[in-house]
Structure formats: C-alpha cells, structure tokens
Image 1 (cartoon, helix red, strand yellow):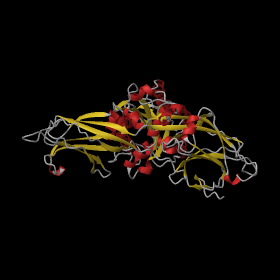
Image 2 (spheres, helix red, strand yellow):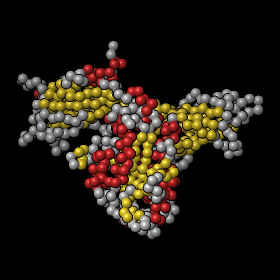
Image 3 (cartoon, one colour):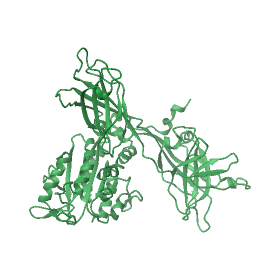
Image 4 (spheres, helix red, strand yellow):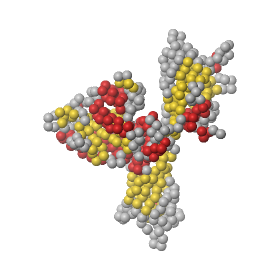
Amino acid sequence: MTIQDYGSIRSGSSGSLLINKGPPPPSKPTVYCELSFKCSGLRDMDVLSKSDPQLVLYIKGKEGSWMEIGRTEKVKNCLDPTFNKSIPIQFKFEKKQDLRMRIFDLDDPGQSIGMADFLGELEVSLGQVVAAKSLTKCLTHPRFKDCGNITISAIETGGSHEMATFKFEGSKLDKKDFFGKSDPYYELGRQNPDGTFTTVYRSEIIESTLNPRWKSHEIIVKRLCHNLPYQPIMFSCFDHDDDGSPDFIGYFTTTLAELRARGSDNISWGLINPRKLKKKDYQNSGVVKLVDCRIDKTYSFLDYIMGGLQLNCTIAIDFTSSNGDPQTSKSLHYIEAPEGNQYQQAWLNIGHIIQDYDSDKVFPAYGFGGALPPHGQVSFEFALNGNAEDPMCAGVSGVMEAYKMALHNVGLSGPTNCAPMIRHVSRLAVSAAQSRTAQNYYVLLILTDGQFTDIYDCIGAIVEASDYPMSIIIIGVGNADFTDMERLDADRKELQHNGRKASRDIVQFVPYNAHRQMPSTLPAAVLAELPRQVEEYYRKRRITPIHHADNVTLSPITDALTQYDE
C-alpha cells in the first residue's frame, strides 16, 4: 500500500488508505445579523390618503459611493409603519460599516424609487446599531425639519455554536526512528461526501516518546463533523520527520456520538496500520486513550456586544525623544502636516470604529516616556490632558486635542518603557474579571516608534494580563526595527515569563508602514484578532452574554447531544 500524502484519509474497499492534502487554515467565521425597521411620525405626502412608505438600505463602498443592499416591503397608508421584511447584512467588526436608510413614498405599484417622494433619511454605522441592539434616531430631510423617527433593531443570525474539547494520550506507539523514539502527532479528519477525510485539526508534536500526552484542544463541532453525531471522524497518528515526510503510525475512526457517550470513561482505541494487517500476531500500532471530552455551547463576539458588553479603550502614545522634535517636519510627532502624522492617522482610523462599542465614547488617553513640567520628571503613564485625576477625553476628537496639548507641554525623553501602562490597564481588567459577567472588556492601544526598552518586563505584564478581560494592540510607527515587538504577538510561539505561560494570546502588533499608502486598511489588520480574543476569554471561563446570564454554567457533553437520542 502506498500512502500518497498526509492530510486526509479515506478507507477504500480493500482497506487501503488514500490521503489528501490538509488541513486548511481555520477560516474566520462569517457573522451575519438581520436589521429590522420601524418608523413613527412620517410626513404625509399624499392629498387624499396617507403616505405609502418603503425603506431602502445602502452601505458606503470603498470609494465613498452608496450601494443598495436591500429594501423592505411597501406599507400602504401608514405614517407609523413597522416593516415586516428584515434585511440581512454581514458584520465586520474590523471595518467601519456606514449605513444609510432612506424612506420613500411609493404611490403606484410600478413606481421607481427615483420618481417617489423622499420622506427622510438616517446615516449610522452598523457598529452603533449592534452595540445598542435597538437604536432610535430622528430622520433628516433637506427641506423639512420634522420628518419623524426611525428605530433600527439588530439580531445575530446563527451566532452561537457548539465547541468540542478533546484531550488524547497515546501508549506503546510503534517506534519509527532508527536511532531514537518517535516524535508523534495526530490529525482529526472530517468525512467528505465522497468518503475521503479532510484534516481539520493537527496536534502539536511530542518529541522522542512512544507514550505521548497531547494538550487538550478545541474545535467547532460543525467544522469537525457538520454537526452530525454519527458521521465518521478519522484519528490518524504520524511520526514527525525533519525532512517533511512523516511516517504513518496508524488510524482509527470514531463518531461524536461515541465520544459523547464515553467521554467520562477513558475510552481507548487501537491504532491500525493496514500494511501490517497480514502480519502474524499483529494487533495494533499503539493505543490512543480519550482522557477528556466535553461539548460546550459558545457565543460569538457579536452575541457579547449585543448582550451589553462594553469595549473600554485606553490609548497610550510614545513621547520618547527618538520621535524627533515635533516642530520639525521630519518628526513623527509633527502635527502641521495636512493629513496628520502617523500617530494621528492611526488613532483616527481605529478610534472611529472602536468608539461604536463604548456607550459613553470617552477614552482615557496617556503618554509614556515624556518629561513633565515643571521639573522634567520622566513619566511612563501621564494623562495627555494634564489631569492625572481625570484622564478621560470626549470622543476621538477629544483624544486628538489632548495629544496636541501634550506636545506643547511635555518634553520628549525616554526610555521606551511600556510595562507600567500595561499594568495600569490590567488593574482595571482585574476588577472586571471579579464580577464574572461579560460587561466590560479592556483594550490598550499602544502607539510607539520603537521597540520597548523594558521588553522583558512587558512580557511579564502581558503574561499576567492574559488571565483578565483585556487585549493589547500595538502599532509601530516610523521606520524602526520592530523585530522584538513581533515576539509579543504570540502567533508563532506562546509567551512565557519566569516559567509561567500566557493563558491566551492577547497581543496584536501591526507596523503602520505596511498600511501607510492606504491607512483605511489599517483597522482590518489591527482589529482582526480582537473578536476571537474576546470570545476565547469568556468561553474559557464559561461566561455567557449578559442577556444569557441564567445559563452561566454550560452543558456537559452528556447533555449536549440529547436531541439525537431516541
């Protein structure tokens, strides 16, 4: 038998194994919500009857043009319509999705929107709508002052799902290396309609052992088996080789229903290598035991936002001397540039999105590495507005005003120590963690022109903060070498400090120069990981959105699939 590749496995009629490519990188879940609309107090544009309103929904495109994405039905003779037809829209947290709702009076069945009377409009972002769940605003019209009100309501469609958590151990695996023991890892495969198996998860490699104990891992049930409890799941075990061609050890098949039924019984399977089946006295190529298995209902980022979660963003700006004299055009803090400097552009692009998820839209804004008047004492967490007791700034523009004021009053100094700012926000997150509710999540946005001088202390602060409802976004401005900053973004290797590992990845680092030509693309890169980080924090602690507070304890596996029991 020839093993052709090592990604997914099909059991053929002769017992041979066909192996195809895998696994693909986990795709980012697509989240949709439905918008519903009602109006009150619309203007009556008809003489012998009332207006016949219809709503048209538009979204702003990349070039600033408005594109229609849906219409409601027409409601006859009504100035207070509740439209029955909702309009679906994809939710993208990392982008500012501007919406325009226009109301028209359509008198004739075949009348086009262009020929209808215009009753009023509203422009709002989708973020504002989902954060409020139900938002009421006044309609505007170029000729009339009183045009009535509109209420937009949002619900997520298909947001929550089930997450399976598994932990496996192996024993007495076949020895595949001539001079040492095997370096085993395993893959889980989802069955395709044609009988092949596509790899949907690959474990870590455990070096030099025949008795591996793999870490527990999570996978969305739909990704594992299309939510079908009796669909076969393939477990295949390999010995890793540095040359990139792993050695096949063996496989077995199971189902989610079997895992569910035996989740607490430490069920085990023998690994079968079809090439050895004809050998006398062959039993298996090792044994794999299920140590832990559970299925939890999980919630999406949008579930938490619509449940009342507030994103509390703190901004911290680098005031070290390496930025250059703010009075000169070469300085990164030069504020006379028509389009604004990189610090300003970065904050404007991020702030306008994240403010929609903070009800009071007030931001604590700090600087670090600056020399404070009157004696030039260096501070690593000073308020940009000069008020240490109340560092809050009203809105995105308020932060910009405080930043400009600080540039006139605070001298640039150093070093670039940022651990104090991380610990400052972390203390706020500790209080939120103690409440055991999904009410407040903290985001620290750091804008810096170079690597942190106290990088080791920063790693320690980040490891501590990983236990709390907090994320850190770092944007590197200018042309410095940011190699060490990439270490903080633990996409490749988890952070450790004094033997303690971070409980989750909470840092996202993005160099501004990668988006300098198109600053509008910066938010997508900066905010892409935040929804996942929020979901992961609350899921690990089994905390539901506030409006699901009666379900804080999630279902164990023995209850999760009872819908399939007869």
